[in-house]
Each structure stands twice: as structure tokens, then as C-alpha cells.
Length: 135
Image (cartoon, rainbow, N blue to C red; front, side, top):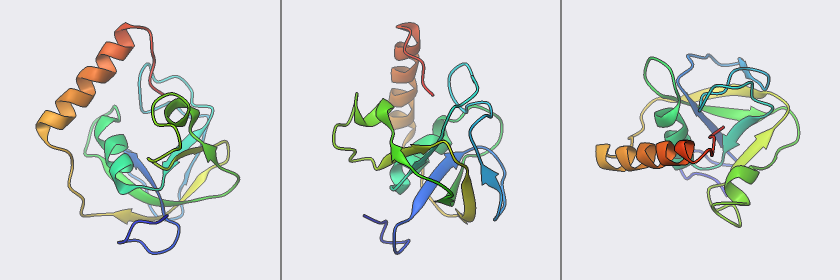
């Protein structure tokens, strides 16, 4: 499945990091979420909406950014979403132990409403208080 604005099999990565074409996004760096533990995998999605959530929920200063990325190695379903929250992977959420290569940036995108964002952040905080740590 692909996004109609990006023909073919497009993958996206939402973050607050300022990257350029050719940069690699890899595992082994501090996570954008939670307690910022070292990430064992790097995450990507086949939907722009999921990447928007990634950009909006990432910790750090600056504006959220969404990159069009290509995997440099095998990808697998993201079990944090597909096994627990959205069986069947409708969010097209994946992870890889290999880096992602930035091949472009989505410049114009619309974030979620303030109400939707607050609801999501409140849910993340409730989960954190229950000991469920976001990646």
C-alpha cells in the first residue's frame, strides 16, 4: 500500500531531528520517546498519519519533521503496535535493526488538532504511570 501523494511503496519517519537527504537514521541512538533509552531498532511507517504522530510526540526542541526514507535492510512489523494495539498492522508500522536512508522530506503536512494531540499525550502519560514505556 502506498500514500497517494508518494507513488510506489513509500516509508516515512517522524521525528524532531533536522536531517538531510542521504543521512542515515539508525538504531543505537537515544529514542525519541519515553525515558530516551538506547533504541535497538529504528521505526518507519507506510502511512503519513502515523509519521505525523511520530513527529508530534517526539521529545526535544524544534518542530516535528517527516522524512521519506528507504530501508537499507530487512523490516518487520512493529510488535508494539501490531501485536498489542492494532492487529493486522493497519498503521503499516515497521521496525528495522538496519539504518533508514533519508531520501526526502515532507514539507507540507497538517498535524492533528490540539484536542487530538492532548488526548494522545494524556494516553501516553497514563500508560507511563502504569509502567508501560513508549519506545
